[in-house]
Image 1 (cartoon, rainbow, N blue to C red):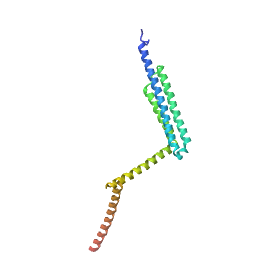
Image 2: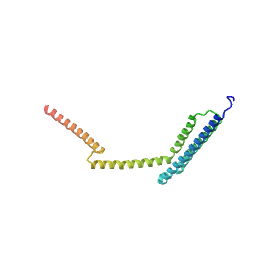
Image 3: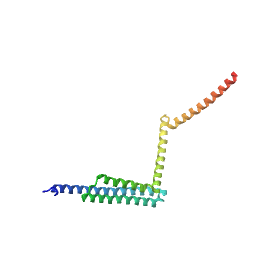
Image 4: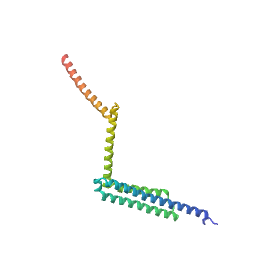
Length: 184
């Protein structure tokens, strides 16, 4: 048997490797579709509950469609790379990774540049700030009931000290002028 003729073991290894690559590619594709579906469901739930967001829905859906197209183009590139690898071309794993990284960056940009995303983000930030305010109020009430000083108490004391020092300096200046007047 010559070196140019592949033996049965190397063919079996090649088939096994290609089966594994195809299985992994299919799993990644299925996971991508599931993630896209979850994203759309959570987005629609959020949008349905906010009128300002609902008004920008068309633009948001266009952004999502662009993002989906980006992912599908990445899947096609991935399959092309896989076919090239099957045909014997030397394809590095970095190329596979880069396809998905570029797709992720581009699709996030497609979605994040929409006014719907801005409205959803604004609503979320507003909700978080409102929640934080309630937590801060509850914490302050709890600290007061336990006899501890809060941040506001310490700030108020600081402001009073600054005002006290300002008045003290004003009184010292007046006393110095009086002493100077009495000595003259």
